[in-house]
Length: 167
Image (tube, rainbow, N blue to C red; front, side, top):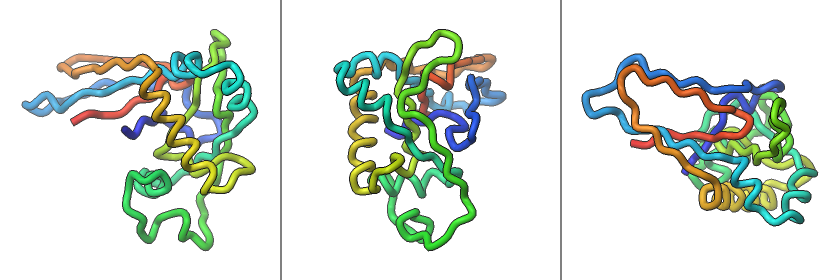
């Protein structure tokens, strides 16, 4: 499952994500899964929470196929970051545990579609750890699936919720 959060590749990511389909196909178009990353963080043992609070994930403004290739969800190709000799893309780092600016609640902050590592770690070490952390979040966090209907409008906290489309 490729969960993501919007604008993680920006120095100051958005606070909220608003989704409002203007049109839907006759089939309904599928749904959107929302994963509560605060619940996932709270499900971790306290020692693991403290370890993760010390780490920063590296996000970059790349297409999703590039980052996904790092985590085994895409085919390596000419734009695979492992093959880049030079790039004009700028890396941005964010804590792996994000604190909500209003509530102070802590949540995992992952976006494996835009992440390409952990500060100070090799890709060989960071990739498996981030993938297993995302898997843990999917098993431990609260998931809500929204089946879209005409006129729906959903707003979620980008600091604590990841999402992905279903087909």
